[in-house]
Length: 194
Image (cartoon, helix red, strand yellow):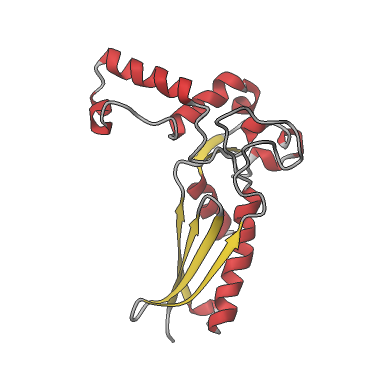
């Protein structure tokens, strides 16, 4: 039996998928799913509340929609049996950061947190954690941390640590409710495995 793999790329505005034949690495099918909510940068999908400047969130339901659409679409378009798929690779726009429960449920998907902006995934282009990044950078220089040199003397506000620190400082209740703060790729790995 011919074997295939699926590659899933969760991007800023869409999820893209390809089906590749293992024997010759030929792409045999592709699918694109445009996220209904796209970049959430003015208000949450419910309409409230309005978001401050420099915010950029995503809806994890969009990621699930990409999985639910793209994988069946690839198999339908190609005629390949699901049993012939031997692996799934996931790529994600980093650093997209989200607080979750211990079993990986994004807090924003829980009724009590759906209206709380800090409970939603912060997309790579979320720059509202710049004050936290500035403080971390200054502290790294003050302490003579060697890691800062590897990054040109400055680490980006787009990274996980600054977004997690922003949650802790601006929404300590969300931080306390989160059993994990993970990268979007980690969440999608859990979702794809389920």
